[in-house]
Length: 140
Image (cartoon, rainbow, N blue to C red):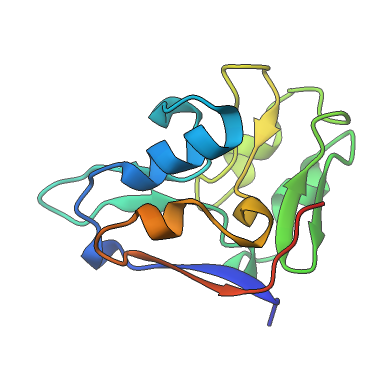
């Protein structure tokens, strides 16, 4: 098993978007759910979909293999997108089975959760423990 993972429990999610706001604020300095690396897709009255990278449950990590510039890699249980290598083609977006890769509206590059270097901002922001972190991820 990989050394770091974000555990998601959609049954505990109240769709408050605090995780998304904490993520975008930490990563971009702007509180904006549209540029967050973790998103809750509301389906009320059903439980929401929590869109965040779950590479440990992903068969073959297709995003890594489809990237024409080799900008995506898995390192010590953390998925990284190298923005210097990413050309923003978006080939990785439709192949992600978890809807976890997005093209940023800020710089037109792909982005995904990198666990905030081992201390995900979304986890303490979640008031219902729908997100938990286990591991020792690290910033690249």
